[in-house]
Image (tube, rainbow, N blue to C red; front, top):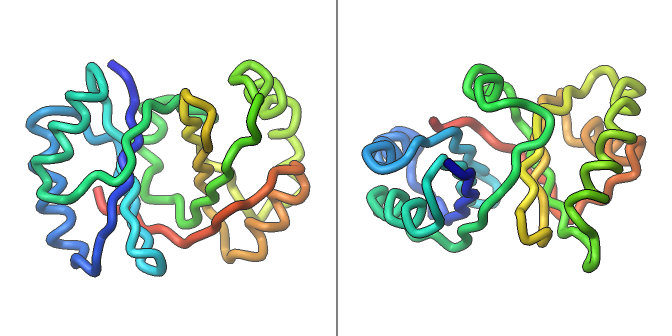
Length: 170
């Protein structure tokens, strides 16, 4: 099974309805997590599916429009830890990766820089989803506020293209 990131617009759909719609997805794929950003009206869903088509078909059962579907790699946690801790992440950072960056170079840099998060103990790095096409990554944090996330990103030397608050939906 592969991991797929699906991004969609929430368009003001209430949490209870989102949760209900996402339940329909689970008949075709395992929904690892779904995070919603009220400030951006965005939904970030990660599914375990056999291939991209299966992920698309599963998400279509929600009645929501998939605006982006990409295979991703999970970095920083294993699947079981995500299942246990998915409700703890409350900030999402999107970083559009620079052209020419390889997965190998990204992972090496991540391993070298991650220990630096200890310099900002009030923020907890949770996990990253890196698009296999190396277009972008989404990093999730448990933090008291936005400034602390930005401070942590500065310490590890990682850019921020977009920062938003998130809430676990499923």
